[in-house]
Length: 211
Image 1 (spheres, rainbow, N blue to C red):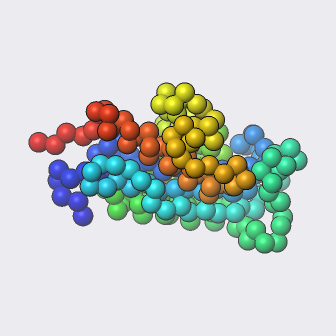
Image 2: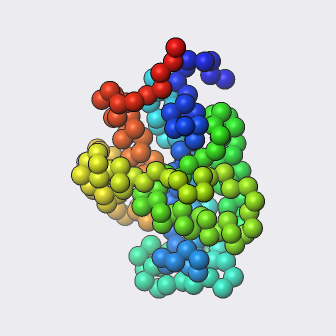
């Protein structure tokens, strides 16, 4: 356990734990289109108050009953929803297991709840919230409407809003052949988020002050 006065992620974001989320979907409409992959990347803070990627929880998701699948979206992601080697799990199982891991991290880091971080976060948050409603999940660890959007943050920090281009400006390796995998995109987004927050700190930006 951290002692008072040490750098704690719970002191950095109003008690919220930033968790990077990426979803790969069968379309653009959260209420009707399937989630096909979802990943949550956990970040942690070191003794110097710098963020880094800790680990990623990744799930291949079976389309919910009656879900819409747009062929153009499948062509874009390269996902075959019914491929036997996907080892896809039901949406409720994926969301429940992911939320369980997030709640565990919230407790361990002394935070009050999670806040979603995403590249064009409104898209990811919309699909997560739609799945929560579909599955009647009562314990959603994420703030219901606030989130951090790395598209906006990287536009400010690097003058780029496209994930691959923002990563290039930040010096983060990005392989377009691996893109549009939830785990890969979540981890690159997490690296981008950490880089922006760390550069802000190192340039003299706000950090918690302890007496």
